[in-house]
Length: 89
Image (cartoon, rainbow, N blue to C red; front, side):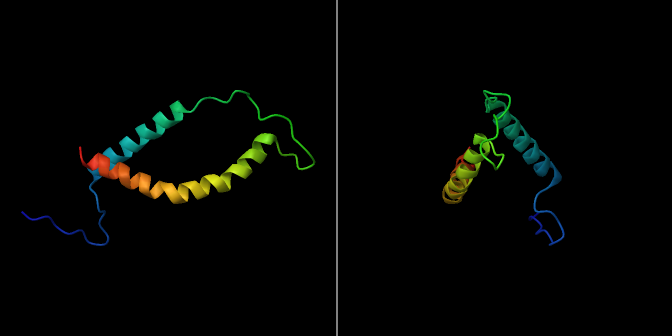
């Protein structure tokens, strides 16, 4: 029996595949969360200057545009490589 083309209102993947994918992504998320070290200090420190921001806040603000730029440039190719690697199994 040939495969049936899904209609626009039908999902592209079946419930079993979607469930397995969701489970795999949940396990990946959990593994990533467990691999991140806990902060060295329980709090980000005292506010600096009149803005009330901590040094941690200021560093995050400075790094965010750089991280976004790097992700915009590199994430698509990284995802593509990983998809190719996983589909070769």
